Length: 148
Image (cartoon, rainbow, N blue to C red; front, side, top):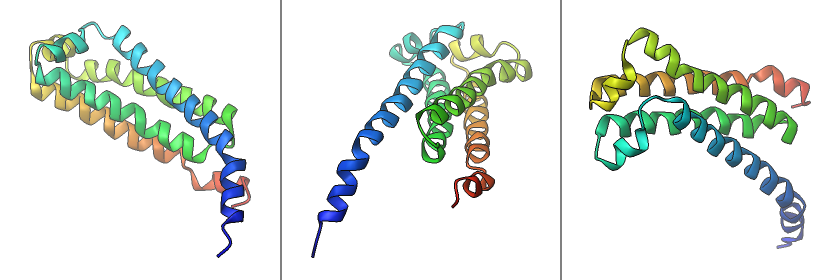
């Protein structure tokens, strides 16, 4: 069994893999920092203090940011494409908190006060929007452009 071709393919593709993975992780971490900075309640402090609603809400943020970013990574033409669509989807996710607050007044205070129902509501919005964004980025028409 000749394993030369798979090894050569791995060696040739590994640098691109590392670059795209690094860009995706960079976008992910930057988005988490932006989210933490833009929310009026200090979720990480609340989580350290044992607040389950803050943990649920922040967990929804983590998953909600990762899903569309993973889809961007899987469907990107290259690093620039990943950056463009990654930034667009992550900005939309960051705005989702503001929209959730419109529907459920006082959302930051409710989460800080330990309101698990409010946290689950926010988590559901974040994950639901993430799935929609991931589907939008994975548009089957894009594969036709790529020749797939």
